[in-house]
Amino acid sequence: MEPPSSPSSNITAPPDYHETSQRLAKLIAEAMTCRFALLHYDSASKSMIEWCWPVDSDGKKIPLYHLERYRNGHDFKYPCCICADGGGKGAYIEAAVYPWWNEIDKKTDWTARCALDTCGYRVKINVYFQLLSIGTFQYPQRATEQ
Ligand SMILES: [Zn+2]
Image 1 (cartoon, protein in one colour):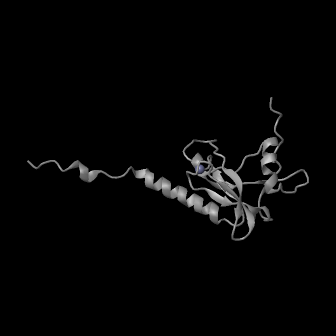
Image 2 (tube, helix red, strand yellow):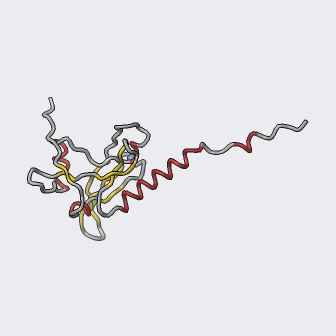
Image 3 (spheres, rainbow, N blue to C red):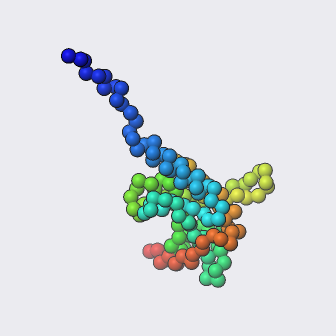
């Protein structure tokens, strides 16, 4: 009788871990290289979709330094990062948006970045502000909180 083959030779990494990380890395690369739209994660389709820049009632884009204030008064969220993947339909993990002084160019860069610094989502968003092709949306005003 032959001895049973060693089980250790059959051990492999869980099959979908590698696949998942590759898929997510691809999504992040997509967001970072897309030049005509600001992409963020959509948990319903598990893909990157366009994030719409908020506009005022005249259709003018809300400037970056007003976004935070706008966010307080409107039903509006910063882009969703890849951490929402696996959270099911409707999962939304809001990225942090903040200004960053660029010492080399002597100007302020605005970045949307994973708030937990986990998934690697990071997009410079000031370039999109000037784009004519970017999608815009007039977000509804938030009901006054009690
Ligand atoms: Zn994240």
